[in-house]
Picture 1 (spheres, one colour):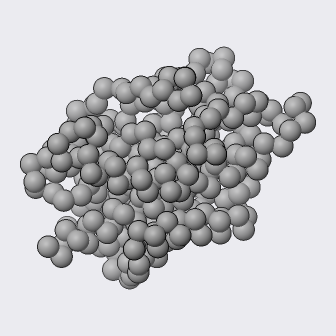
Picture 2 (cartoon, helix red, strand yellow; picture 1 turned 60 degrees about the vertical axis):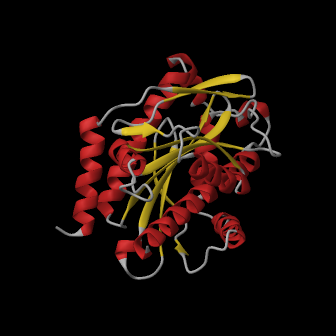
Length: 279
């Protein structure tokens, strides 16, 4: 069975069968509590667990450089177990929850709605502003000594009432076995700009579609945990029309950081995989 088929099968089993659903975690952002639970089949990484502190801290530092605060790191439960027992070096199927920083801290975006964010990002994903995303990610990777990678620009993948979704691929060359696909969801929950990143090996279209489906389910659950149906309805109304304030710049700048952080996490995982193969 080819690597792409194995990756698709493994991801499908993890997403459909639900291997050990982790309990929800709660994070306090600017005095406001936000609840989160990873998708079925994924487990939250405990950053204080022996052997995982370095992994979490390194990821948090790289996210900070791209303008994000790492809140949660989750991976397929079987892979987490393998790493715990020394049977694997780095996760292949994993994800992150990040909060986008404004002025170095996590702040609510008052008066803007999720509709504003989605509409702003829909235009950004099709504009030259995506060059800022690539430049930001490249700068951080150079600081980390990462060379020889090829990052594809995040491209529009889908949107719904919960988030806007984009995807990208990173590789070290033409060999598809060193490729990883990332799907990013950017949303506004409790007035905070938040993003979830999910990754899987290979650039197979089926893997991307599986990740996108998982992100849709994850964001529906995430928003439902933190907002009442009435609040969800209000969040889908434009705030700019009656406020006379253009929040587009604020939201787009925040979203650029979220996507740059997604690309950086993508590159870092591939580097770990290559080192594992070399050793």
